[in-house]
Image 1: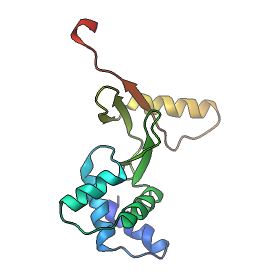
Image 2: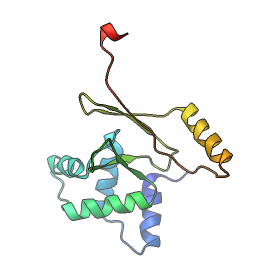
Image 3: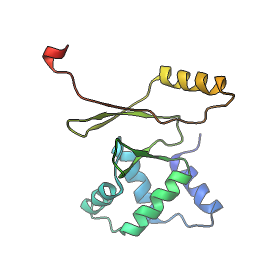
Image 4: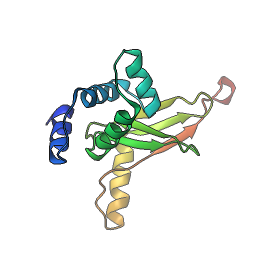
Length: 144
């Protein structure tokens, strides 16, 4: 399988765009997060590493990474703020949102994927991807 950089490079070439140093930095930063992130959070992370990347370049590159299938865009709860999750062309990754702390916990579960495929097949479709979010609160000791 091709690496994310190869996939992104090929995508940009197909769109007649350049694979720049800044775009490579943004891709690597997105890969390192290991959890969903906001565009501003990524920009702050790059600037803390003393990387000179403009806000416009971050937003444009995130759009290209989405189109290339390397990122997934997620909206949690009633929030209109987009989060991005590096998926690297893998099948879906789902999320649990801790309502108390705002922490976003990625997970993958074969039963969810099997259910998705079964539902799609019943409806005459072939599932390509899905989005599954659980919003909850940690159980307290007395609740268990």
